Length: 95
Image 1: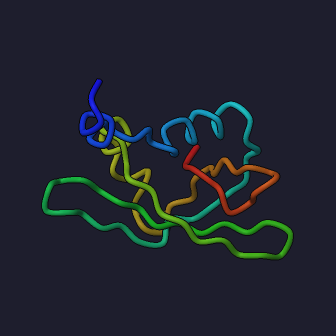
Image 2 (image 1 turned 45 degrees about the horizontal axis):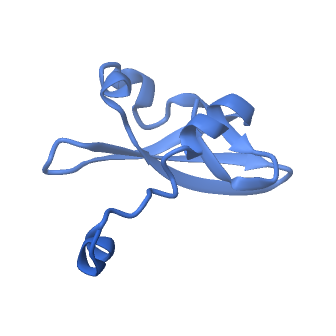
């Protein structure tokens, strides 16, 4: 492998295992979808809020194809389950 090949190689995605880790080890709380946005590419992003220990957290997530198949579940105002990391409560994902 040459020097330039080394520079052009793909970097590992630091967030690749984040969702899997949260689904396996995260704690669950309740949240509310506050908004959705559809990108021109067809991807849908949901924005949600949840509260822990008196602190409100707001986050967003790109929906998977499976999640997009049930649009009412992720409509604004819908209550959803949130998985969060107890050591970093701002790190969350839709359950």
